[in-house]
Length: 211
Length: 171
Image (cartoon, rainbow over all chains, first blue to last red; front, side, top):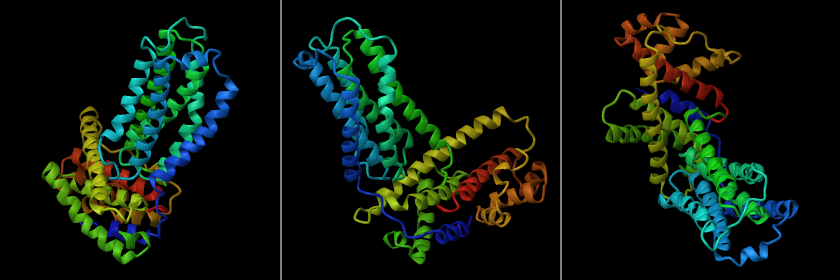
């Protein structure tokens, strides 16, 4: 089979291209923009009244830190994946997932959160989804600057990064310490969002790319 | 690739020609002698074209290229499995979907040019089933293929044509 006609058509449409910006530039810009977005959102929805006391608990503090790290690692991995062959090791994808798994483990540890639910069901999950939409959209734009060879991972990690940021804001806001509430509202929301992102990426992978 | 990124068409044509052989060899080494090797080559060339702005000239070319080729290979393998499953389920159907709604409103010369860019076997099938309005059975007999194989090849060709016609500006 000759591919000369296809090559000729590709060559005929080969205008000079502007190279994609380096991954670190896109990551820093996304992180800065997300911080600028989440800080006022956090102030707007309010901070839990016992935050000072909760921050004194190592489990709570470390769980918040693991969320932040998971979000950054997920964003970095999503951006790196947008350049074919740039991923040095599969651990770049695995690290944010492990950090995200560490979050509920630390949160529900004896020195984490414990107590009764005080927030109506569904509110936290909806808030996490709503807050995550902004950073997810922005990160998606940065990822789309490239051409990911693994869209299911790129999209899943994009949503995971944004959901981690939103869950962090919500953790500082939600006064409920009940295990069932934290699992069913906060943790499940992040998991479902990330899985939904990955599923969306898988669908996009099956579809032909559009101009 | 660096020259291609700057718009050097001669260098780009030469690169794509070399990558055609390289992709074919890569697919052959990974999955052996399969009838859809040309699909892998075709999709890899298009993916390289779409992703050419992501190649960093300061980095080696091979990891970038093989990441794309590997991804396309996996996609084609998955698609072949899906098509095979669908073929079993829809074996009662005798003709591929009639009409070509995606191409309505598209310049005919553009469609013909896109068809001309298809690999030989796919091009023959599209020309005979769509332009000459021959039945799948006739085409299958003429090309010494099974009816299922004709439908599968037609399906692949539609996908590539959609990609080429919708992505004309990008291509």
